[in-house]
Image (tube, rainbow, N blue to C red; front, side, top):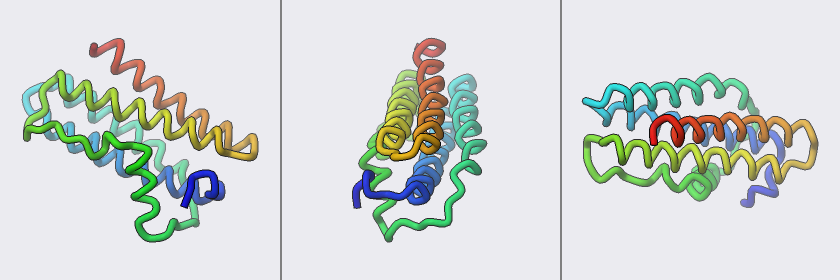
Length: 143
């Protein structure tokens, strides 16, 4: 299954799956930053923003078994990146946050580009802009 073949409803379903995976990743990184309170708060804030957006991805569509995960994994490869340690330090944490925010923004931009109708294109474009603001925040404030 290819992204360009998905209906709007299937794209929303994919967004919900991707957002759930990103949310889980941010939460796991927050737990792994034990002694770095500002970094932990960053990950919790990023997770909170993703969680707030989840209701906007309501969809009745379901993707075939494994296809959603495959697409999400191919578009968000940093979800599978490991910090290499049980505790995430600031340098590694900011790197992982930057990678994930950049990929998530690109994910939404890709969906916007592949959307045939203006309303969907605008919706996915706005989601991408929200992620780009997270990316800029991580880059300017933390780096």
